[in-house]
Image (cartoon, rainbow, N blue to C red; front, side, top):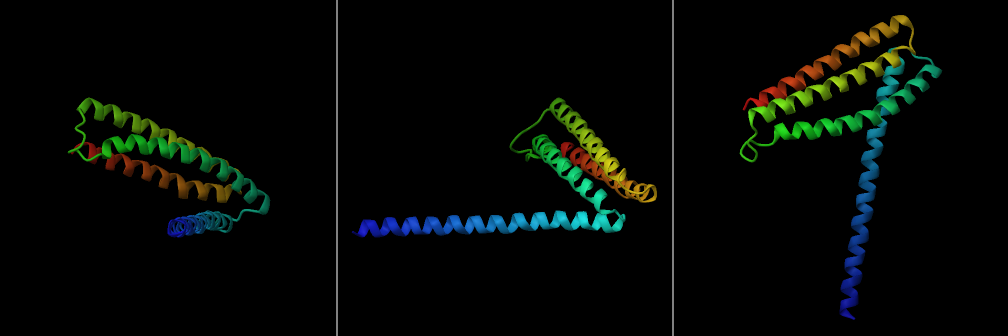
Length: 158
């Protein structure tokens, strides 16, 4: 009988852990979605988008987000090669160069995808707001790529 109690206690603890994990996951995934919605609402009010344009922008953003997740995963794999601590993996200069070239090509594809998305969204706005929107975000995207490249070059030179 004692074994049944222990088995029941383990099963009960497992159920509690599973429920806790489920609720924690649900809690954090909702926050992420709320953050995206807040960002899109900010864009709607900041760039004076009407309801139709905003709903189209949401659809564009959803499709863009799926592509970005795939590209981010690909870029992360390449970056990890250079970001490994040097004491673990000693990369040759040729390998570093090829990884940096691959990373740069991925960054350019990523930047092109993002700028294309920004242009698609800006087409839904009035010309004045579209120009302001593109000015605000294209420079930001380009700066992010430059900073990423600098960080990788600094890491690769170590």
